[in-house]
Amino acid sequence: MTRNIPTLSLLSFLFLLSTGCAHMDHAQDEMEIRQLVAVQTEAWNRGDATAWSKDFTPEADFTNIVGSVFDGREQIEQRHAAIFATIFKGSQAKVTVRKLVFPEPNIAVVDTVHEVTEHGGLPPGVQNTEPGLLRTQMKYVMKKTDGQWQILAGHNTDVKPAR
Image (cartoon, rainbow, N blue to C red; front, top):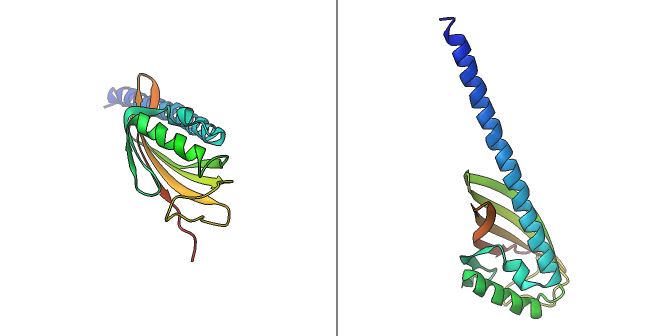
């Protein structure tokens, strides 16, 4: 029985080591995803639709706050170029990652809160959450391919004003 104790100790150590390494990998992934969100936010604040859309895969889909669906990075970029030239021209966004989970090693689900100010208008049916502030909840599904995180899908929902 005493012969098995070193083997069990070694197995326990290897398990803890592998678990720790997995956590470290996710820590790096989380940092990369948070950086992607920060770069995207900076692009929004510049009104740069190309930079805002660059991390979507070519075949990604995006549902905006009024429920319109855009298929592919090109459509997503075109739609954002249109809103950056009109109702969201000069707007400023603050984005907070609310929750980030990894259901599989190379898949992430990212929930963010967007707070948009200084906009010149809103789409039909959308109201400010508070005076001068549009708050939305964005959910992204991301995949890491060839060492890079990319957005497979995005879904944005406006937060209604309190009654």
